[in-house]
Each structure stands twice: as structure tokens, then as C-alpha cells.
Image 1 (cartoon, rainbow, N blue to C red):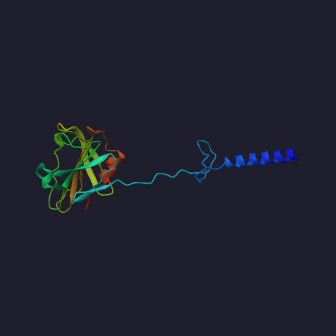
Image 2 (image 1 turned 120 degrees about the vertical axis):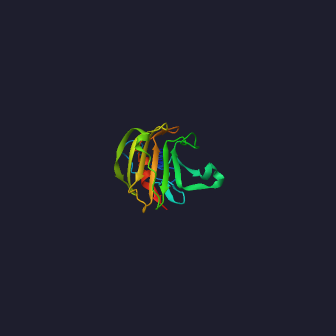
Length: 199
């Protein structure tokens, strides 16, 4: 009798130990899917994040991760306040250096109604190639690509039409610089271009 009771107690103890192995201390369901197909826990996709928006007072533009806005100042002095009609947006650098800031990135200029943008002469570009007009969320852009004077390869683009009764923009997109290289077809470059909007 005592032997039978001991056997039953040992069996009950074993069952309780096995049951304890199937739970965890946190109370959360255990995830057995560690590379195999077992388990039912589904991973949650990362939340979508939007780039922060920079406002100059005349226009706004998105600043993707890894990019930074650099205002330009009246007379080149910060104490005189930033210009509202122009902005540099560069990738991979934390401070501006050199003749065009260090790049790569954008120089954006806004021209109000009643003014005509001063389009850069095509003969100032080496190996200039016209871009096909591209319509984005904001404007239709025309432009060209080539090497501008001594400042390196770039895309020069402007909004159409170039008339006095409409606001317009022009951008230089420097493709190389201290922060690396970019391409006109890069998703973040296209996102910046498409986001340029009057306030």
C-alpha cells in the first residue's frame, strides 16, 4: 500500500513539473516560433513615420532621416535672420563648409509672383542633358543634369510655367559632397522635391 501511494505521488509530481515547463513567469504567451513554423505569434510591422517638415516662412519642405536643413542668412550673418525665400537641405553633414555648403543636397529658391526666376544658362554646364518634365505632387518640373562650373555634378530644375503671375521654384541638387553621393532617382530626393510647397 505504501509502495503504491509513493508511486502515485511520484507520478503526480512529474505531471506538475511538466505542466510548469509550458508557462513563463511574465504571464505572456510563449512564442515558440524561433525560425520554424510552429507558434502563432505574429510580428507587428514597424509604424510608418513621416519626415519632419521645415518651414521658412514662404515655403515648406520635408527633411528625411539623415538630412538636415541649413537656412541662409541676410548678409551671411545669423543675427540678421534667415532668408525666407531660400534654403539648403543637405545629406550626411552636420555643418556647412565650402563654396556650396558641403552637400550633397538641395539649394532651393522661391520666386514670388511678379518676379522671373533667373535661370542658369545651359552653357555653364558641362555635358548638359535635358531632363524629361516630371510632374510630382506639387509642381511640374523641368531641368537638366550636368557638371556646373567647378562645383561638380548636379541636377538643375525649375517649376513651370516661368511666368510673372505664378510663384515658382528652382533647385540645384548637388549629387556629390562630403556626405557621400545621391542620385536624382533616390526615393528621399524625389520625396524632398515633391514636398516643396508654398505655405
